[in-house]
Image (cartoon, rainbow, N blue to C red; front, top):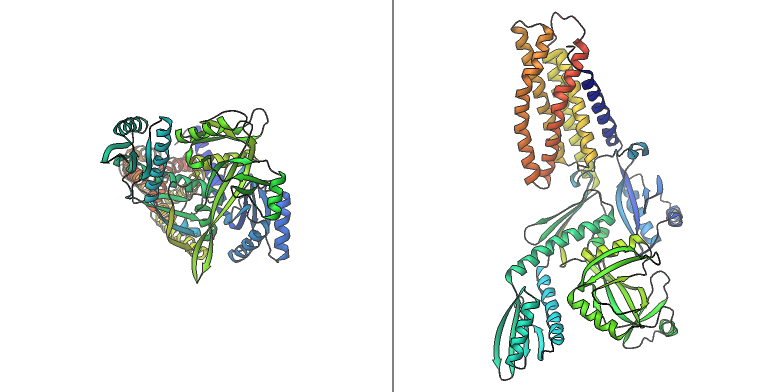
Length: 626
C-alpha cells in the first residue's frame, strides 16, 4: 500500500481540518435577542446603548449582553419570555425613529467569525417565526397606470397645442382614457401624437356627437399582463429589501400563483413589527416652498396653529425647525424613473441623483423655468401600519409621517435629471434611493393568512431531527463495524467525517437547515456507506481469488471506483433536478442531498483509503480483518 502518495495525505488532512473548523460554529446555539436599527436618519451609538441599558435596568429586565453590532444595537436575553418583555421596554424607550425587532443572536466565538465560520441558519420549522400569505391588488396596478396615462395625455395635448374639452379615465376599469376634442382635425392630431408618444396604448376613434369628438386610448392587453407580472416581481423585490431591516437570515419570499406572495421570516416572533415593516411605503413630494426652515411666518404658524389656507406646516428633519410649504405638488415619487445615491463632489454631503419620467420632467422644467431663485421643498412621506386591537380583532391602522428633508433655492432650470440633498448620512441616501427606485410597492398587498410558529415547536423539531440523525448514524456505524470488522470501523470514521464536512460546507455557503434538510442528511449518511460496502466486498472477492492482502486492498479501491462513480452520478442527477426545479422544502432537501453526495464520494473513497494505507501500508499481512 505504499502507492498512496503523500500529497493525498495532505489533502485529506486539510479537508478534515476544514470540516472540523467550519462545522464547529453549529455547536454554539443562538440566543433570543432584540435588535435596534435606526430609521429617519437616527443614529445608533453609545448614547443609545446607555439609554436602552437604563430602561432595561429600571424595569428589572436582565440581559446577558448589550452591544453595538455595526449599525445595530443587539441585546441578548436568557429566554423568549424575557426577550418579549424587553422588546416592549426598548420600543418605548427609543421611540419611532428606531426599528425594534425580535431575533436570534449568534453565540459563535469571534475567532471563528473572523475566518468566515458561521452556524447554519435554521428554517421556519426549526426555530419558529412568522408566515404570511399576501394577496396583491392588481386592480390597483391598472388604476395607477390609467391615472398616469390620463395625466400624461393631458400634458401631451397641452404641449402640442391641441384643443380638447376633457381627458378622463373611462368608468370601466381597463378601458383606458377617453379624450373629448373639439374638431375632427384635433382628434386626428391627438391620435397621431398619442400613438407616437405612447406605443403601449391602443388608440381608436370613439363616438361623435355635435362638436364632441371622442378618442379612446386603452392600454394594450399584453401590456396589462406585463404590468400584473411586473407588480408581483417588484413587490417581491421590495419586500426582500424591507425585510433586511428586520435582520432576518435567509427569509423566504416567493410568488405563489398569479397574485399571491408567501413571506416566511424564521426567528421573528413579533408579527406586528414584521407587518409594520412589510406594509410601509415611502416616497418624495416636490413642493414650492414658502420661505425657508425657521422663517418667522413658519415659527408663528407653529406657535399659533394658524396655517395659511394654501400651505402646510412641516418640520425639517434633524433640526425640527418649522417650515411652510405650498400644498401644490410639482412632482411625486410615482413620476421618478430612476434614483441613485452618491456624494456631492463640492460639499461632500450625501445626495440622491433623480431621473424623472417624461411627464414629471415636463412639470419640473415648467416650474423651474418660472421660479429660479425661489425655494423648493422636498417632503419625505412615509406610511407605516400599526397593529391595534379593535373590538377584539386585530386591525392594521395606517400612520403617515411627513417631514421636509430639503428646502433649497432653485439655482437654475432643470427637468429630467437633478439631485436631492439634505440627507444626514450616506446610508440614509442609499436607503432613500432604494425606496424611490423600487422601494414602494407596485401594488397594495393585503395579508390574507398569518401563522406564528412558536420557538417551542422549533426546539421540539430540532430535538427530533437530532435524534433521527443520531439514531440513523448509530445503526449504520454499528452494522458496518459488526459486519466488516476493522474495515467497518474505518468506514465508520469516514462516515463521521462525512457528516462533519457536510455540515461545514452547508454552513459556509449559508444553506438554511430545515426538516427536509435533516432528512437529506440522514439519507446521505445511509447512502454514503454503500461505497464502503462495494470496496469491502471487492476486497473480499480478491482475497477469495488468491490475491495477497496488499494487492486485494489495491484492487478493491481501483475496481470499485467505477461502480461507485456510476451510482453517485445518477444520484447527483436526481439531486440537481430537485435543486433546480424544486422550491421551498423540496429545494432544501435537494441542496442537502447534492452536497452530501459530493462529500461522501470524497470521504468514502479517499479518506478510507488514506486511513487504510496508514494502518496496513508498511506491514506484512497474512490476512485482513474484513
